[in-house]
Length: 279
Image (cartoon, helix red, strand yellow):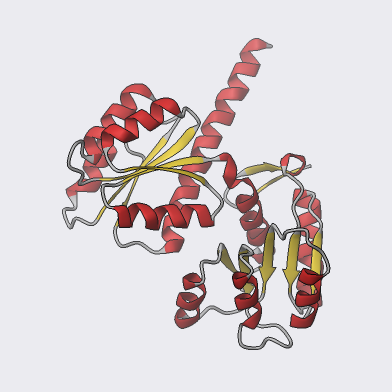
């Protein structure tokens, strides 16, 4: 079984590894819709708990680790977000599924290092949730390289990507980045700073493009500079995208997803052409 996600991504349910998915939601309508969608689209079963006590009992009844939890912010018995605190304290990855998201609540839950959040405010909400689940379960297939001379910046981006279940390598300069790329042909995405002492982001991108095209690897440039020409220079050097610091978590994850989606679509199209020629 396969399904075409909202973003155009193509997933195959049988390709997913077995996963223990927990759904903490008190709405019978949404529990039914989510359970059916995950089973039909991804071939996944889900364990449902409709209140905080059931969530605690569900966790305690078995030692089998929880792969991912989908949780409302408020549950009966946990009307002030205690369910999220409980799951995060247990180091369980969480996607929040909620009807509202005010700015203050958004900042609070993102500070908790949740995986993502999906709003129940449109008819595609369940489809968007299924896509978020599938991304989390498949992101480990993608190897991402972060290049930045700032240890703080490397740590921040690395933690964000690992939260989303990507495999991550880091390099403190351009020379190290090129060595890592040579040793790891499975790297699909490079996120590089512009201002670095040995090889700046432009030159690093040029050298990457001398060896690997956009059909093999995507490059996102980042910078905190106010120079508006930097983004154009990155793109002309062979970059695929550019982000200006500071950026929001949602923007960062969306750009990463869009670039990897494009790469997968290009590679899928190339594969179809080879098959057509072979036949």
